Length: 330
Image 1 (tube, rainbow, N blue to C red):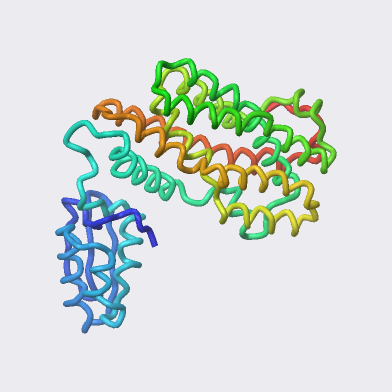
Image 2: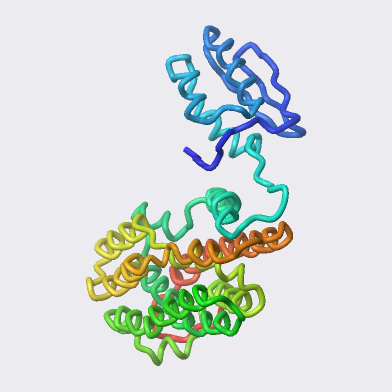
């Protein structure tokens, strides 16, 4: 169930029509029918009317309309959201400038969650959890991850050239030091499957990996606030992904000295509280204008799409290759 909505609301303009089998919803050229038993039709109409008001949380709607009413309100909200018939009753567009911390909680986090939800599970993660992923795709993921990690110090460096306060500089320097030379862990990982540094040096990253690296470098030099916010996407560990990754390695017969360095890098990020780096940096920003907020969100949503595309390219490219030590043209 999507927990992004604070107060789920039917979009303005959605027409509610009673039909013999239940309720029909229409919005421009799309819509759907919700079939319910005759005794549940009145409750369903009441539920949709409350949903149209946008004044009730999902939890409150579940209390008012429990499943025993003849329909599941959470399933209906989820289905309507997939059809684009739901928005949020809470106004997400602020009236004006926000402090960095307020921007983090009221705009950045909700937009990231919504955008990631809209993208869905990545093809790579889906293939891990379904057991379809191949050994070469897992190794290919590690190779692309190596390119990201190898460039991390060079990407952080331009951010240090800005005139910032002591707290921000300390946070960035700490991040730089903690990320420096971490590519050596990934080299050890890939050496376990006979991929050496010379092979990696002779190959270009996939286009989406290159785009993500290039974007981070541009933000670090030209739009520092976007760089601060982008760190949230790269420095926050995912226990769910890590567990699926380890299971996929076991299933495909990959040794522990292959996957352990990747998990170790994630653990270092967690122990160093890298997941809080964006919040800690933004706490030092007294005000962000509406225009700057929108620029940041455009950049972050673009990065989310790049990372989703990267996973798709990993699946499409590496699943077709037999010898990963060769140099391929994309």
